Image (cartoon, rainbow, N blue to C red):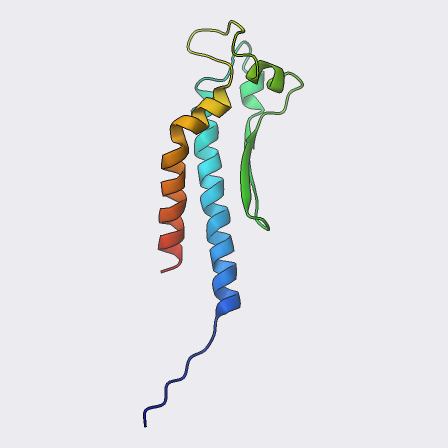
Length: 115
């Protein structure tokens, strides 16, 4: 009779998957920030310079944020008159444009890491 032995590596695989997901989320958030900055209001450039992509490795979860007291106000009022090629809702609209590409990037990254 042939005996087969298998070593369970569940913990290592789970950790590898979490790390891969965090990297993929960070890459996606960074790409989203870059796209959003193309439409971010830009009078002096300060708002755009506060844009940040980050990830919580323990969740994992990724996000993009802008750190000024007026970022939300400008984002949520697309009726404001912004400079040429700039708009309100710049982050939300960038996400709408990129959603499928970002999802596919995360899938490919996880697939590649877990093979």
